[in-house]
Length: 367
View 1: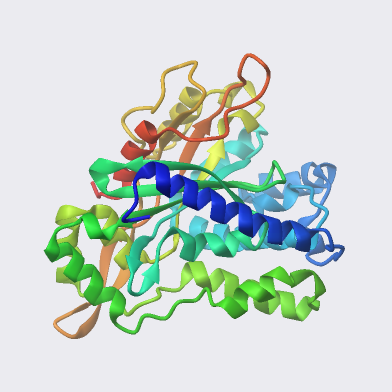
View 2 (view 1 turned 120 degrees about the vertical axis):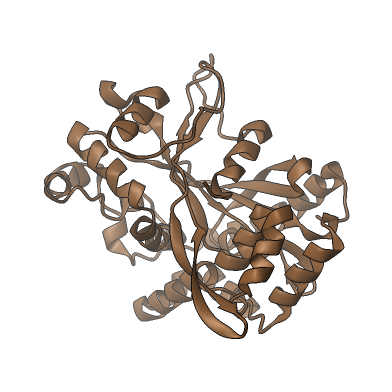
């Protein structure tokens, strides 16, 4: 992606996705497993006794589990997303406030998309595809490409054939476009004890997930989660992170957090209650509950897509200082809101707008 124009990059990305997609389609035709049964509950069961448990605990358990699916690969994907959600919501306290508001109003939470970040490098080889191929093995396809020239970023949004599985927005920093100083910092950190988690063997196992035993699938799920959660290099030197942050806060974020989830996104249209049926009303509810929000909403009223977010939370992160292990507070993630109103023909725009996303990237710059 680094050395190509946006047009040629898009063509190459989509051709590769189509090739992978044909392989996945062939595999999907044989899916018939029935594991991860808890992730195939009927909507009625979710809204019955489970709804009462939410009201007593103000927690929405396994939010992706209410999606009805039929294949093992889809159930595996739901389980993966719920594992990622568990760690994310434990770190992003504003999610707990949102859950409380949703439960109190009898609304519904639906995850519109998940965002992940990466570094585009040739040695070691990493970038969008070092993350996306994990999800491509689960049926996702590249849908559209985006460029953010002022931030040296590129992104692809991925969609699953199942319309209710969340979209994926995976971005990468085009490292070759940065200054020599920043390139050297990134190269130094990523080359030290770099250990990619997305091995070819793991991907082959994901393609064969329908034939694995329950225990094998649970072990495979743990490995897939680790691709996202575990830092693939040694904790970076604090001074190097600070120096990189001066040119690219995005790059500094990836050095600290690796491939961790950057945000989950509540779809406003899923709330289905008057008190929360617009992005303005939901922002007002969160603000009244003490959640710090982005100062403005991206997208004019009536637009195909409108977005905003909470501020990013700061968490304690592993780094080094003069050869010693230390913990440093650094911006992590935010919780995003998206409103996608119907088009005149009744359909809904499922993509993204670069002009909106470029401002949302700034939410992890730090306050």
